[in-house]
Length: 179
Image (cartoon, rainbow, N blue to C red; front, side, top):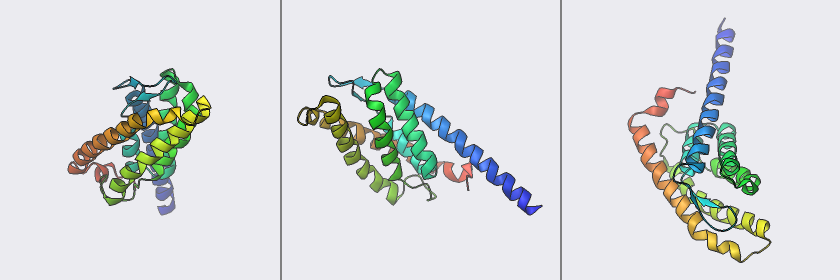
């Protein structure tokens, strides 16, 4: 009887994680492609604050689910916003960013996730610098995108901190009961 209940709870938790991953992927797509979406450069790049939701997903969900939500959500945003050439790079870059965070702490905003915000900036800047260099065949021109990528990472970090503080104050993560 106990094994049946444990198996049912495990199955329910996996379903909840899958649904949350899909929900985060959708929110990341909308936040990235449609809200505060500012086109920059000549190669289809754009400035957005969807990474805040990637940071949030990675702070709530186990790594495989967070990486999937980040990659799918941001990749879809590239496709629906008319910049599909970036999607393959985005899949890798955003999954790497999600790996920096932990969902194993009681609070969303904890020491590791605060440090992860600092790590997200170079992954974003270097990742998209390399992507644009490959797309354009030029290793100098992509340097022009570094300020926008810095603003994107910093703005998303600030937005994540504000959301995480509010959710932590509500004890959102403990109420979600994913463990």
